[in-house]
Structures are given as structure tokens and as C-alpha cells.
Image (cartoon, rainbow, N blue to C red; front, side, top):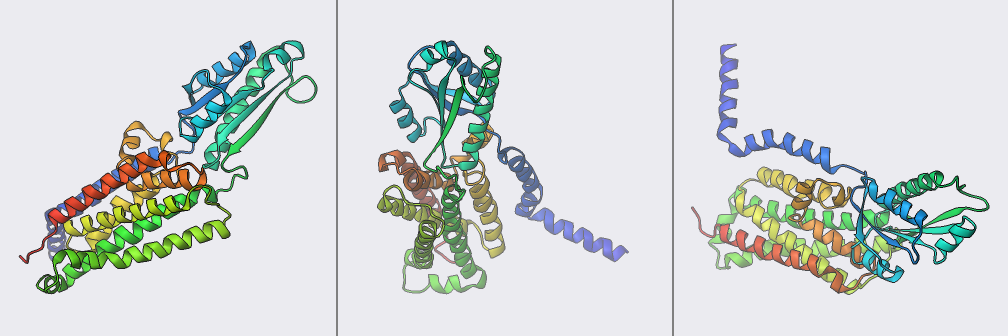
Length: 369
């Protein structure tokens, strides 16, 4: 028993001397419970809504007040036309349009009839369906409180719904951009970092560094195969998305490919950064899993909307490369927006690529110790 306790004590000493292991063991549960507790939410929050009404009407005013009084909606902009509202939605300035019919005020006053059209962004079908359901429920409740107006039949207020970009509500429209970002990041960043660290761990990196080839070319040569593999994966994903899943490339295919190449370069730079701060494949795998896969799945908007997360997590998502790439893919591929709509995303990815590459090259050890 005494010998057993000695070995247990020895193991505790090993763990206590490894700061990284302690951080992983103690911080990982905290990070996971925070992410899973706050980020994993399908409830709608802070939905930007636009009201399009040509004439003042007390019923429309009551509906607008009820919608904005809920905990789910916030006004995007006041007093806009239908054309302006659609432009704002395409630019990301709104997620819902409540459009009253042109003669809504007159019909409500004379016949008690009218039409309300709800337009939501269908690029995220789950979120869009929830938004339409919540809004329809609020309108129905408001109308039920106003002079016993019936819903359906003669003398009614009809509510119609429309989904932009994804009228059939296919879930593939939502997960294809996320899968593209996740696959490209795993192939480029994780596999590149492991490949370079493997050379360190087996001792062959020392042989490569004393060769006539410059260290920079050695590093680039390790990244090129994964870049080509990512290009093949990108082509495969796009072909399967269009011809098998029925997700069209409604925007520019050229700029979609260019942005994808930029994201691949960012991922390669991130993999190089991981390889420069680790010496074992296990450490590279752990860092890649914590710093790449989990944020790419939970904090990029791939599965759960960023707008549902607490403000702190929304701020953190801006440092996740996949967040910007998935947003750009949705705009170019799903929504069919021009290049000018993704200037912010491209700027963020370029900045990350420069920062990751500069830090990794500075920390990379070109000399043998």
C-alpha cells in the first residue's frame, strides 16, 4: 500500500509540473459549461425588425408595439419603404420585415380586413421559422384583443409569410457554409501543425534545418500538400452542394473561390502558429481541438446563431476565423450578394492571416538548441 501511495504521489508531481496539463484539466470543464450553457441556444433574441406601412393605423400601431414590447425583437430602422427594407435585409441590417398592405388602413376601417406580409431571412431556416412563428403568434394575439376580429374567413386580417434566399426551407442552405469552414480549417490548420510537429518529435526537423534548403521553404513545402488537398475538398463540397444537395451558388463563383483560398491561407498560418509553440503531436492535437474545432462549431454561427449568445461571447466570435468565412460564404453563395457586401469579412481574414503568419515566423525556431 505504501508503494502504491508513492506512485500516486509521483503521478501528482508529474501533473503539477506540467502547467499545460493542469490548465486543460481544470479550465476545459469551465469553458465547456460556459459554451454549452450560453452558446447552445435556439431561442431568438434581438431580431432586427423593419415595419413597412404606407398609412397610419391604430391596429398596425398596436401590432408594432406588441412586437417591440417582446423580448425577442428590436427596431432596425423606422419609416422605410418596401424597397429600402429589402435592401437593408440583404445587407444584414434586418432579419424580419413586417409589411402592411397598401390600403391596410382603409380596409381595416371599412371592412375590418387587411393583409400583413412577414418576410424573413431564410438562409438560416431554423431561425427564420422561429421568427415567423413568434411574430405570427403576437399578431394573432393582438388581433384577438382588437374588437373581436376573427382570424380566417370573411372579414379577416390575413398573414402571409415569405422566406428570402431559401423558400423551401432546406437545412442544407444553413449547414453547407459551416461544413465548408470546418473542413477547410481542420485539413489546413490541424493537419499542418501535426505534420510539422511530427518532424520535431521524431528528430527529423534537425536534419531538415541543416540541409541547404532555407527553413522558410521547408515550412512552405509542408503546407503546400494540405493547400492542394483543401482545394480538392473545396471543389468536392461545392459540386456535392450544387448537384446533390441542391444548394445553388447564387452569387459570384469566382469571388467565392477567392475568399475560400484566403480562408485556407489563414488556416495554414494558424497551423504554422500552433506548430511553433508545441513540440509534441499530442499537444498540437489538444490545442487544435480546443482552439479550432470547438470554436468553429459553437462560436462561428455554424450551428447556433451568434445573436443568441451573450455579448461577451459575441465579442469572442470576432476572433474566430470561421465566423468571418461562414458569413462571407452565406452572403456570396446563398444570398447572392456582390463583393462589396463581404469587404468586412475579407478585411478580417487578411488581418488574421498577416498576424498569424508574423507571430508564427517570429516564434519558429530556425536554429538547433
